[in-house]
Image (cartoon, rainbow, N blue to C red; front, top):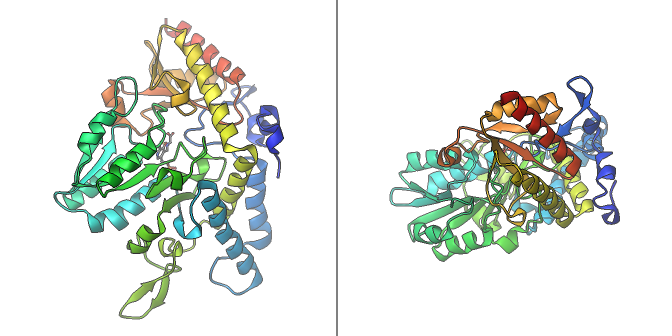
Length: 415
Ligand code: C6P
């Protein structure tokens, strides 16, 4: 596999692994890809591993005694071990593969929430939740009669932890919080939230969609009951994500989907469930994607997640510094790069975020514009949309300069 720890953050070397970064867009401009919060690009190692599976050992898992199926099953199961190691889980029993973070949120909301919540119970979220969690718990609240409450966000983009201590009570059954906000970039105090939930015998669910790709995460250190993330935001393929759950909780929980592979014994009268994690992985899973995710994890481990974190901080710091020099740019979220992940959401006075993204596109710069699936947070900020640049391991400060040149262009066009 490509990278050694010693050549970590030789960005040019890393870039060689990502063929798409050579791509030219808009009449011969090399793409500047700054939309990594939405999805990252994939290195050759991941693409090749998936291709190799399809070319040489494609078969269904857990179903055949023939050699191809055995090879596929081993690779699929070992992918769980690789991910478990990566996030500090106790083993594959605690790692359920899902389609993405959204499905992991829904899995817990349906399998646990629908069965356990009722009138008088409370679920506490944050005002910076992604719709994946906000909409899901809102609907479970409606179905069960449980109340859904929100920890406020302060004017400078942090969680109001004093308010959180009042909101979380003995009626609280679940605290579900985004670990790193995909809009503000804020790194939330996950351990403090877990302690607060546990002080009131509630569970904590952490949405790590923007955290696991960008910093070392150890679910045991955080004492998370549930933790979710998506492979496609960490150089892995789409269609594969992960729900971590403490073994004793997953064992107690009802399955979410019924069907093949999640059963132990079926009669016309009743069914018993398979062991963890297979109890929660009904039907033919995303085998190639699981194999691709394991290689993505190995790729990031070779670089070292602390190095990834430092690189993200450096890029976010540079972008924040340059943007602070511009009076007509408003940046959302904490001003200190150490308190945030590698993404910056902003608006340019007098220019709609969509127009800005379109001008960026003319420059070959790919960013995201819109509400980033955090509409209530945008309402709170008093804006309909924002532009967002999100960085990853292959990005450089030169690319941030390219972004700011496009901002200059937009300013002139709309002046
Ligand atoms: N955020 C973004 O551009 P899925 O789509 O299930 O892989 O991830 C959902 C999700 C959940 N939580 C957070 C914090 C997220 O950032 C995301 C995905 C993308 O910001 C798409 S909206």
